Amino acid sequence: MSLSLTPRDAWQPLPPSAWNAETARHLLRRAGWTARPADVAQAVNEGLAATLDRLFPAEPALLQKPRLVSRFEESAVALVRDLQGKTGDERLVRQRELQERGRLAVQELSVKWLQHAAQPAAAAYAKWVLFLSDVYVVSAEKVRNAGVVFQHFDLLARHGLGPAPALAKAVSRSPAMVIYLDLGQSQVKAPNENFARELFELFVLGEGNYTEADIKEAARAFTGYRARADGFFRLDPRQQDQREKTLFGATGNFSGDDVIDLAYRQPAAATFLPREMARFYLSDAALPPEHLAALGETWRSNGFELRALVRQFFGSRLFYAPEFRGNFIKSPVQFYLALIQDLGLDVAPIPRLTIAPLRQMGQALFYPPNVRGWVGGRQWINSSTLSARRQFVESLFAPIDERSLNADEQIEIVAARSNGIDHFTVTDDWLASLAPLPPAAAAAQLSARLLPDANATDVRATLQTYLATGADDERQKLRRLRRAAATLLQSPDYQLC
Image (cartoon, rainbow, N blue to C red; front, side, top):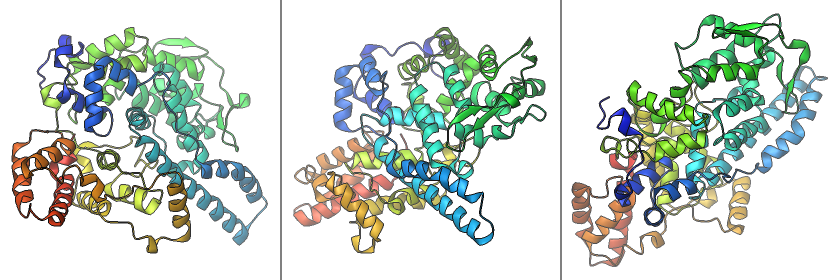
């Protein structure tokens, strides 16, 4: 990849004179989900530094534990204990009951996370936690415990702006990670290498920056890590290997935490996470090594503080360079939440209207495809997932058929409405401000609200021509505005940020 800025200049702060509506829109769409006009105006008025402080606060709002997750935790230990005395069909029935409770709890966790992430004040940090979860990957499919899945994401959120080594140490004690990478099976006589391998390859260093001997020695340091039946971490001293180990040329009686500290002393640690950030937030194509090295050097000098990395990355000249504007494919989660925010909607508390469309678009929350997480980029788009995106847009422009809801879904809708959450599909109110405008002005407003390139003249011209037909008939004008908005949201341009 050829860049317009040198490594020396790339990570310098964006000059104040370059901070305007266009750069603010770029930041909000890449760091968060979308760029609503009011949010753009606020960011321009505050300035870049203050906006970054607000998007990534020292004490971010955290997702509260969903009700069904708490209930699952309360009942899971008793159900697992009860299984031990059962055989045959009775055991199978209890296993299915446990699995069903876990599935429903993860469903509610998915809906609650989306509702939390849809709030503009929480959007950027929720996306940052989603990024971290794409590095420190676990899957509910293997973990099968909604409580520890929630605990893992909560851990990422609580440590997400602190020192990266401290985050890695916390992750090593995450019961979800212990289960997902089979640490619970690791014993002194037979160390399991899964966690040690992924720690070096996918969490801290990247491929080629360690040896097989380093993995074997590191695996010995993580023996004895266990997840208790009640979902908490424990250390089993009987299975800890407390003999000397040799890693990266150093020898000592290293613990798991010591191994993580040793890993962060390796040169590759400074560039691994910045490279993953660039892939998640900036470009499918890898940044040149010399540019990553320049960012990594500063990050290392800041003690691997994640908040310092976030501020430099999103505040840099490179982040706002022309080659990174309006050309990044939205993930299904970003596409979904951008629609919710752009249309002023609430996340429907009904899994088949919320989670099912995401799965059809190719991204089921808490179920990444493998230990490497989501590939992203162009992999998000194929004929099937693009069709699912279009169908989801259409569903947002049609009222929910409440007669088709089952009893549980009706209860959820009633509960949501009692809390003032009832904007699940687009009504004419959203179009009210556009209806009185001439076709040219309405087309300009629509494209400015929804597209990464607010000055896309060809799109505006097409919209203007379409809206001009039947402009004197108020009912037809509203219908055309709805159709124009839906078409714009299904367009290739809206898939980009």
